[in-house]
Figure 1 (cartoon, one colour):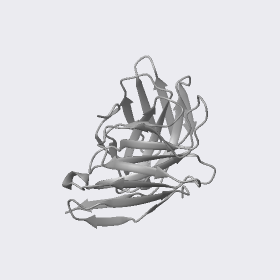
Figure 2 (cartoon, rainbow over the protein chains, first blue to last red):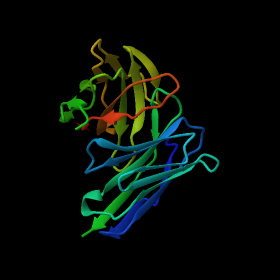
Figure 3 (cartoon, chains in turn red, green):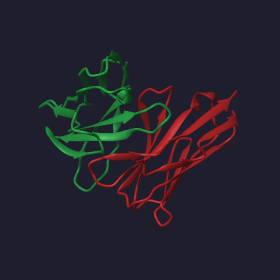
Figure 4 (cartoon, each protein chain N blue to C red):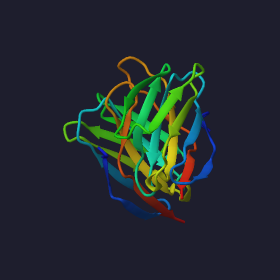
Length: 111
Length: 115
């Protein structure tokens, strides 16, 4: 079973627009990570946010974490066609990185 | 590039056969985790190896087994293959630190098709 649930399941936007996706989880966590996957290949790590952090930025990415609501959001600003991919959140409950993934959000950025 | 390499990239096997998938972890990492990703779904945790010992297992039957070698590379073995084992198998390399979660870096995966 998957702990995280991403919302929406699919998102279609124009280049230059912002893309926001959300992740909810069920149990307490040590950290939450976001990954990108292109065309069913390997996962690319985007950002890790620890349970004691509320917001984190990396380039055009902004991640928030609300542990009271057991939810996180990923914002991609000024999207590009190259951002077209599936995005997954994954929660880690301990230091050992046994990650539990959600079902992913498929993002299509149209040029 | 993450520095995590998996082989082979694609594989076709017949139901009932056995398969071995390989993973070389990133330099400096001591932990390897394996995930199964069915089409259209998120990855599912199979098991993890830390310093050559199994360190946690997901909801997978015993016919899924693994090894980690002294150089921290790893193998995933699946016996008695079933059609439902067809999936992308992902290896993730990370550094386990006490009390601190760290990034996991994934290889490109092995696409297994069971016919």
